[in-house]
Image 1 (cartoon, rainbow, N blue to C red):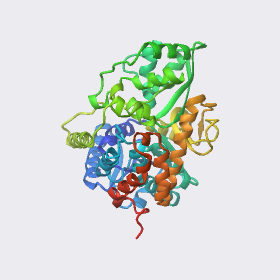
Image 2: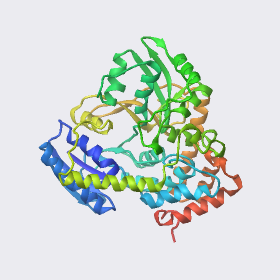
Image 3: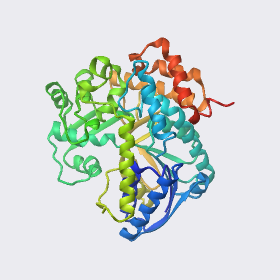
Image 4: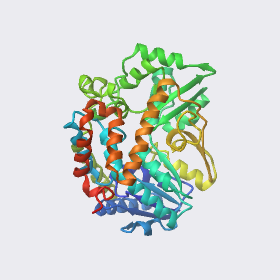
Length: 456
């Protein structure tokens, strides 16, 4: 198996994803090629993988490549975990809009921060696929890079033969919600993927999930044939949150925002609240402490830097044999997809794909997130029908913003950028008349990563 990882120096992703690779019984070895402008980071990961070879008895040839085309040549799979500008650029995404009255807790999806991140990320995404069409057109591209919808859209626009899958693990929170609301208690230590796609149906729970990345909703659910949406709605009326305390404080997810949305619109969204509140200004404004009323706090760039440093140190400890790995699957769905591609087996996964009718009342070709079946040769998204009422209206609005953002990023168009900022709901916490100024300040702050906007 030949695997290229664009963003292979990512200490956030490489421990979990590479551990899963080394747990694949279907693969004994091959090539793993790491590409990252952070060469020391990629070299640290390479040393960790050499340790994995010894520990797991695998025979992977590991290399750090400066030439992306060289890394992609004849690859079977390509993982993308890249982030142009990294923490320096994230800092501008989050901090510049604050001067215009717009404060976001995460910055990875929507709002001015998500739009700004997309401007520098979508063009690179399209360029990667163009390189793949030349070097490895038969490969599967597995993307975890945010902003997921815009990046995956740019990738699919550039794809002719390359198969592009966008993967996000936010849906995994449904396992905890089903436990709290419906009393479905999984066996201890069961992997979350096993819970969602095998154990829950075995317990009689069947459900439909659909929407757009970080804004997906349970639109139907039956338990032993009983429609349980009324039970979910009743739970939302009777509970303001779940007061979860099993995560670091800045990432605490008490589920208050999703229960509030369920009370109003009648359907339950299933992503972390820190992402969810960015989609609707009623959940993230000055009056509610920009999400703090829902136990959501801003994930600062400093906290991300410290987490990256901690993860880098852990990579180095593992490489040196100073820390032992716990060899169990991470719960990410990427390597189960790879296993099924290699063996011809089938698996269910939550995927971001172009809309070919799986969400009937959203536009064609835009990126939607639904369940899908993957096997050795194809991807079949599950028919999810119409999104209901107001949920559909909210998703259509964000899809329109994302389409404008993709065009602005690929064309280097300030005019389309201003239009996208002016249409995005979260910009409503600022002043409409200042959107042009906000666009200019974001562009100038991140200029070094925006060659399409600054051509001279």
